Image (tube, rainbow, N blue to C red; front, side, top):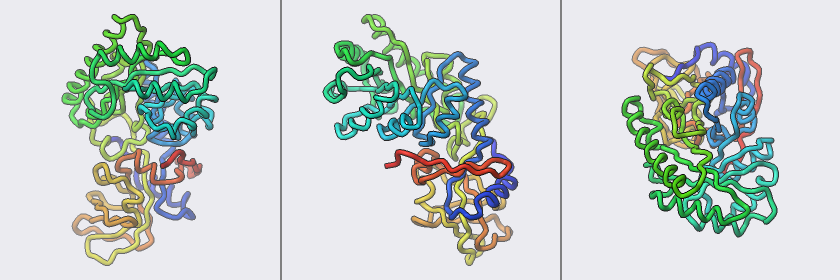
Length: 375
């Protein structure tokens, strides 16, 4: 499991610092967060590879600025709204990592492109047509990368001939430049066993190399190959990637806490929690908290880290506003009104459930960071 700070000390600090904040509340251990940011930046710098952390994980300008200050080249975003939020926050180098086909999203992208260097990915000629029709002439040139399906079966071209054809279309547009390739292996990131994950990642690297080779042989310069993630970054620094789109390393949720490298847990700390209040203790061996599906993402393993409860406690969802936590045999129940910390399940959608993030330091200082560009 990813390293968990002393939960007793963290809980006491959070309880005091947020005593007037209603629960459920989203909390980040800001000292551990900063340590994670610096650790990943050091890994990238040591490997001589660029870092472009993914803002879909945190959706806050403040964390993006910390990542940039630590050496990140720019920021990756999943939606035009995230792109605009980051541009408005002063981020100058942005990549939209999802191919876009919705004309209604174009005005947001156009506004962002006026204040930041913008790159996008495509996997079909119609997306290039849309961009060409909608982007105003004479604006800052757009960088376009080709999204490659490296086995996730979500987006991306499936054949090297399609990559070459798209690159030719990009070349024909004076308002854009070909920037390279993107390949995100979501199907590999969460494989717990390092040997199995390394094997799956090798197949991804081979696919990207084949697309890059076909483009080079067709006369194109592949400046960047971007992608990777928290689960595979240690493998991807060896190539063919030139840039890492890591995201969850800053928080390390319940699933990434299980992912192992050759030395055990990944070298990052758990930092993201939901502060909840005990609302009912009437059933033997169980208690109810005010954090249910509106406070914790459903698409991940159940919470496995608790502050303020005995080791061996387990959580189950009990509706929109409630969660039920079972206690180990013989454990004394907490008092009604007591506050507990619940480790995040899947960090990205958990963040998206809240409007603000409470950043708490070891000294008890609190900053409130707006969570932006939510649906």
